[in-house]
Image 1 (cartoon, rainbow, N blue to C red):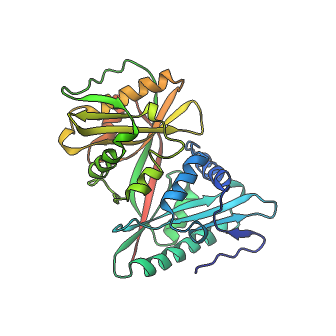
Image 2: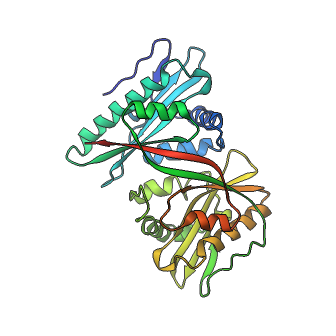
Image 3: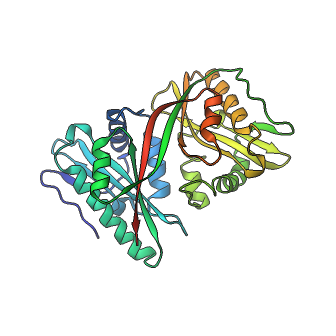
Length: 317
């Protein structure tokens, strides 16, 4: 198995209780690049539990001699029939310039190659890593290892308020999230995102583990739209590290109901509910080249670009 050794540091896999330290590192990296430090330990734990095959083998945490988490690397195995290996992590800004990032990233590539050889040596997999566009150290590192720019993303922020003019399309009804719709919601999400860039169909337990069953999930700030007994669209929201913010994690509209204003109506409802819950803002992430015109939809209900991100890719075959 690929190993990572750094003189003067303690290196190990992920254990129960590490979520707070890893989340703190994620937020420090994001804030240093001008982004929003909104990750929560609950979110980190739910993703590790739901997406990482073996937390001890597929995560490396690098601790300095004083016990501080200096860097981390996470390798996410693709779901069944998937193709994309997500690489997450980074170096705490106070530990930059000491070679930690280069060594951790090299380990991630080696571990990804091992997983590939074990799981799907005849398939064509892709390595993907992302960063805030302003994080020049990270983007230079990716390019040094042969990665190329694949896609750009926006993080968008909106003030919460009631009364946004975005009427619900005729014939539809909207309800808050309730557990009995979970299975149908999962299928609706997989269908709605099947034509989006980067789509991988995840298994039910994996997807629900970091969405509707996550401790950070906010059913009271989530909405599901029905046309008769069929789900037409949905918005799922979560807690943010900043208590004044709500995080809108998933916005989906199934193809037959697109371009009728449904997503805007659902978001307007959620923004009103978030205001009533004491939230001042809501934010979300979106593909800058979304084929559904999502950026324009979000702008019409008050969202504006707060930060820009970039995804890099490299073929693994």
